[in-house]
Length: 229
Ligand code: ADP
Ligand code: MG
Image (cartoon, rainbow, N blue to C red; front, side):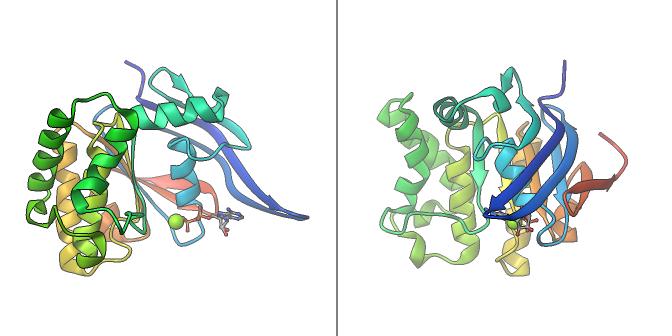
């Protein structure tokens, strides 16, 4: 079977007026189905850009991203939106939760938008996820009433609600204390153990070490990787 994620010579240049920023300078990588891969790099190395391109949130300047049978670089905005809803779970660095919705409603929102499931099946799935992530007792609260670690767990539950092919995680420990970081990393480990394919980007060596394989990103290029995979 070909690898689930196939990225070839991926480049991204941001332009504002006459100023160009080459954020990615030719990235090629593979992720096998069920693998947990981490990308480590300092701030500004291109981690979020890479994640956004693999998740179809933004388009590359050149190069290709293929996930399963989907060639993202050939898709228009509407096709990408459909693709994301069906295939990608995204955990953003700053959680991006909606403060005037309850925790439960935040988690269920992506499923309502893709409306494939009955309300009762959805409620059952969100309940299962909230329990698994240890936040079932927070379900009727609002995100602003929760700690950072709890908010990150809500964001992970929301990313998992549509059973994504690929879970993309941006700096999950960047804004958390070490105990909350550990809990979140254990949750990601558990997802991986259950077969979830995960790509996590981070500047935190402890988080990166959770990968079966660690790719090192420096100024928009992969400059090395650990053995394995
Ligand atoms: P990281 O997530 O590793 O901190 P980013 O992918 O956010 O790195 O950024 C990589 C480079 O691209 C940085 O130099 C950053 O300033 C630049 N960059 C990121 N997003 C934009 C944007 N929307 N417009 C212009 N430059 C950007
Ligand atoms: Mg970033």
